[in-house]
Length: 132
Image (tube, rainbow, N blue to C red; front, side, top):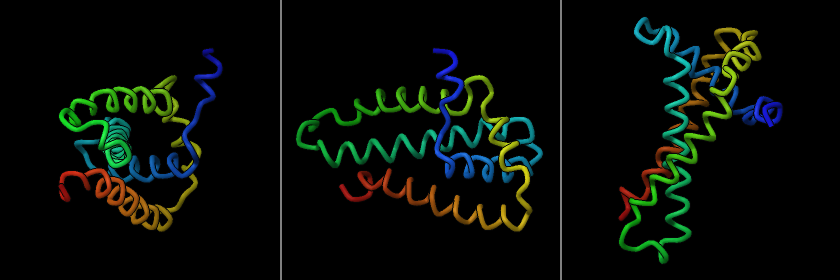
């Protein structure tokens, strides 16, 4: 089982976005040691809110009174998933090595893609708050 958990990896675009976010946060002195933690936390929050909103849109008739109590299982589940994908056995270090060949120009373009990706995830994630 340990071998299986060690070999579980996120899709390549998520590893790429992790590297881009990591290299961007790494530029700040206050984030020098915790850049990997910050971007993993940001990904966790964006994906939890995105999938929670999609779940609410699909099953809103089932969860009428206590829909925000359902957010806790989503947060725990995605916390565990992102732990396995990035933290378990320090996998995040492998993702940094995987994309360390990128030049600054490529990282700048990747930053734009990352911003669009996170903006879309968070916009859809907070759709329920803005519309209803």
